[in-house]
Length: 490
Image (cartoon, rainbow, N blue to C red; front, side, top):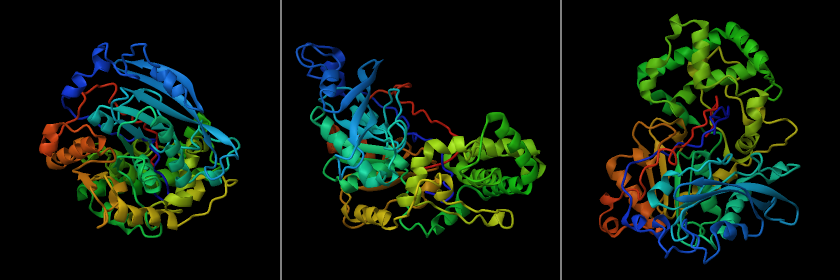
């Protein structure tokens, strides 16, 4: 994660859709056809056994917030009682939101987290589309409303979060007793990896999308090398020129910012000043472009030398966002910045084209967390995870985007890894997915996911090149709802 942490584009990372046909097993599923032989907990409940909602709510600590209908599924938004401290569970609890997209207890289950807030509309993540399964989504601890009150921030760490997942899995595995695969994108991909590191016997497979791996928080040269080569020189120069021009025109653009902040009631207590916030947004510009845009989008970037102040403002605002480093923009992401400044790390880039213009450089996570919350960085945490993945990964798949800055420091596999893979989608940004891989890798990744989930058809077991998703595309259910906040984060 980057020291400026300007990554906040509240991504529920886009895990896209891929076309394919439904499997014969799905077509014959009694839960879909509604035949009298439907099994307990299927969509077509016969009334002879407990309804799936009753079974879920019978779990101690589970309560219903709401149920939302969706054809072919049951969808529940729930609260689950968790200990604030898994090492000392008697010392208080909090309510953690989860959602369950129920298909059939006879199908595999995908365990998803974004690493941030949980969405409360039915959605299928890419592995769920591939395996035609159930899906459990978990809100990351300390993201509101899943935050203990009062909040003991020392209990926000990757082990405590992994232990949240472990308890949810243990509770639901009694109902969903087939194979489980964990997944997530960006910080969610990191979360799935950390969960596997601490509880390697829970999941049958891991699919981690665009997951950064900042092993050494003081060594970030990989990001500089990335920005020296990504895209074309013409595009890089064009972006750098706008970024530089924004700092050259600091005075008139900050006048626009002052008016903008006053009109919207924005304040700057956490970051310290409007000037600090302004520069943080401008320094996000090139990173944000490559994280969320494609090379073709460079055509829309203004020519700095001839652009008006308003055109420079509009371009920076559209790509990196002037509302984020306000108190109001930062507050929802305090848990992320806290973790970046205590365990996850945060990349820094040198930006030589801004020499003499930048007053603050990439600001550290400490600048984006209220000062009354203590923070101390633990440099050994990411090193431990990195070593574990290299030597002990089992049935793990990492997917990166060629043009995504966060992939500059990826997870890598060593000699001890088994049945694990690192693939890169050509030309892809932070929305890289299996569907965007080259054809051979796409087929291989899909086949492995089906195998790990225990639903690979015989034809796929004999020839992985025949692997396809087991669901029909659903434009609404497969939509990933990119919540484009005007900032960046992993």
